[in-house]
Length: 440
Image 1 (cartoon, rainbow, N blue to C red):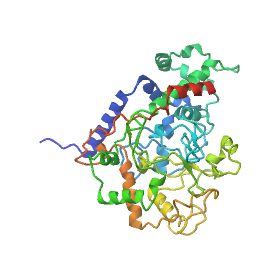
Image 2: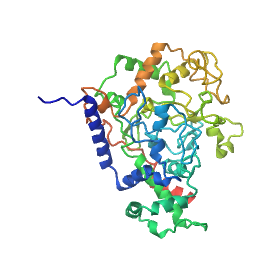
Image 3: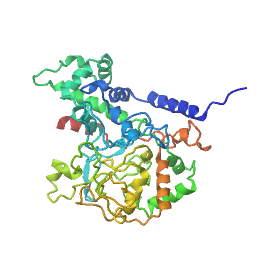
Image 4: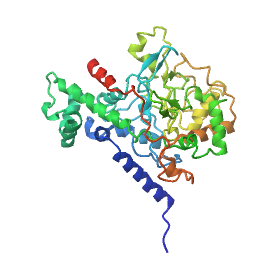
């Protein structure tokens, strides 16, 4: 008698098959980027990579929904509920919650929108990196992240690796062997060029289908292949209506300049101060981060402090997989987030997030009271069931639905209805890359 293979093993096999297929479709540049992304040797103590805080593998938190899709965040944060990530140096930790890299490639270049009179796009919580390439340069030299002392130090690590020497020549015609190992003289010009192309390769990898799958239940519903459950449908209606979530987390598809459909990103890529409470559980309880308004270049154009306290509106895709929530990780669950949006101004007050009544009978005051958004959240009037319905809908934004969905209309192996969707030009155009090289 033939034994039945347990469903979870079948799901695991399909997960590995999809991962292998995604890897097979990578370009040479993206393959190089993947190697760099996962290389711990490029940190000071050879113990941290990009993937350490933005893992390519699923985290295994209790009750995580589901367990087989990666959220591209720090698995330790997900599994332990910690808000910030450890760095390469002992006892060094960041000050903000590591955001997901999933779908980050669709964020436009950082700019001021003359029509809306606000800042849009960029990378990091405060948008300080104009694009993904600039973002990829940051963690290597950040003392609380990978902690390398200089670009030259990173390039010296690169040239030690035979595979990198071959691939940098193959992909970019850059000869790592020509660059001397780091010393205390002025670094040669090639160091900056190689460092830039290292970040460019990582950026290319982050634009690949590995991070941009468009295979959530929502995507199949949008394409008419699947259907919401009753509670998910109610949640979607509330999301777009009474709860006003779609005001910032846009739920409508768009069209790029080549008339290609871009599925909803569930963000408008802007910046907002939603009145988040201070997270006093972060080690050493650092001062609240001022976000967009804390950048010196923004301060120079904003003497009145109208951008202080504003952080980027992140995509809600895979939101069920990425606890804790908020730029400071103050919320432990998705349910807490929705409850906060609903009752911030009505629930009551507690001293801080260590209080046992946090989120139950009250919220602490905003960590930065200036510029709090009182127009779109804080007193939504949602019932408990309506909050639950919104959470149920947001779980439909989780990738790899063919693997975990148990939906006869979307069997394992079903391709994304939006397969091949790429970040629209000119957000990552060759001209933009050349401009960045000139600016450096």
